Image 1: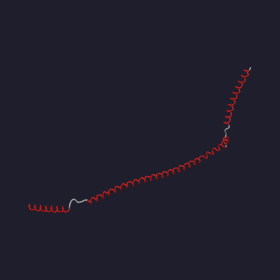
Image 2 (image 1 turned 90 degrees about the vertical axis):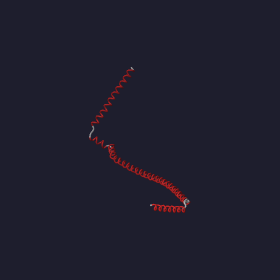
Image 3 (image 1 turned 90 degrees about the horizontal axis):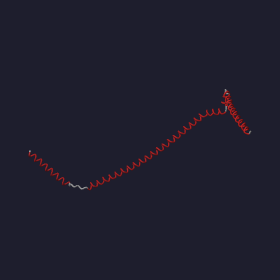
Image 4 (image 1 turned 120 degrees about the vertical axis):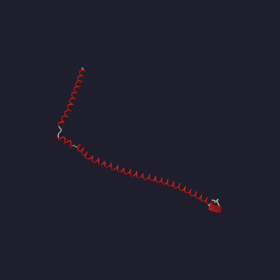
Length: 167
């Protein structure tokens, strides 16, 4: 007997579950079917006039101007940043030029010092040579040379006279 009652209870539960599932599906179908039938201009106008749609449309109208504002802001920021970068690059360029000029000045000073040292050495050598020339004793005596020249002239005259006699 208990088995029969349990069996009846279980069968009745299953039947109720089955019927309720079918009822729920029918309900969903009927609601969906009813909505499709009720689309009209008035319903569309109600939806269009609703707060959500008007907010959405307002956002759409505002967004392009906000986007343009953001783009303008970005453009001004980029131009400002580019100007700052150009200024920094100019500063670096002048610093590099100054460093290069300082290095060149140092090189020129070193070269001029080397040239001055060489000039001083040459002046010292010239002074030494002048001193040597001043202290240099003439090995040839001028009187002897003039005597030898006189004798050579006499011999040349004698040779000319001898040649003129032979002819």
